[in-house]
Length: 392
Image 1 (cartoon, rainbow, N blue to C red):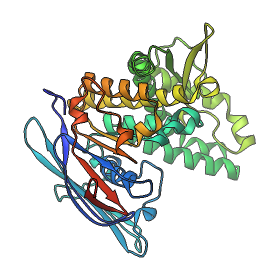
Image 2 (cartoon, rainbow, N blue to C red):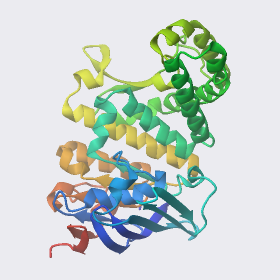
Image 3 (cartoon, rainbow, N blue to C red):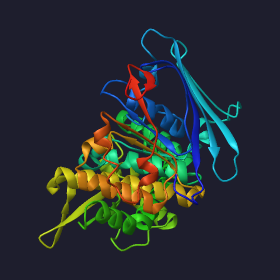
């Protein structure tokens, strides 16, 4: 890891019947490792298991039952994380049992009252080819990104999100049934209160990191320009200071304004579940949607810039550099962007780096001046869910 940067590191990883891993007990240096292997060998599964201990679900959107190795009854994933500054260690573990459909999470052997109380302990950020969907996909992909970042870095956000989703489901169920206005209105207070918190936190986060996104997009994209902006699912003046108080007032007004339309359509038509984050680029002196006009390289650069500002959120909220998980990233990037990504990671002070690649040449590290800490990562091989000595 970069000199002088306080960071958490995953020092041991233990898997049992997770994806294609039957058994794995892996010691990891504080600096990290590079895992080299063919596609389908389990590289992404390895990184997914570490990130599972950050949010307790698959970053690929897979259900927990899909993570259980074929023919087995349950999976277990656990790791010891060590603080490089203080030397303190924390054990985070999770398991899922198929028959009972139960998930159990522990921190230092103690089960928290709620799983949400344990998220964010791994302090990890994952860069993956699937990140492209955050830019090219629909608004739900970008909302998911925002919700994960804010849930692990902003106290109270996850609770507000859970409250809002419950109120939204209840409102929609009643609207579909054509229930009385009074019955629907019973769920308006939690819908408004939680929704206002979500709207204000999303707006605050995007405003705080917009300049950082533009700077990192330019750094990795060799001077190209792009921007992010909040696009709320409410009618709000563009220049309004969107705090929780204003969001609450707007939500109250909007619910009254669209009441007839909601009853006609049988669904809630306004609120943060309809938010988006606009990602734009400069073209011919005007701002256009990146997903509509961007090249493959520009789209991937935007996805990387989003992950880099996510890493900045971890540093800001938790006071240490995150574990950086790089999943076949260099196989997807041209040489120039690969080099500039590594230079940016080094300049910003990364924590432990665990990266994967289908072949060693894809890593493209040796020519990167200033990225020596990543270039010198020890290599391991992987084959059919087994870690091997690289080159064997």
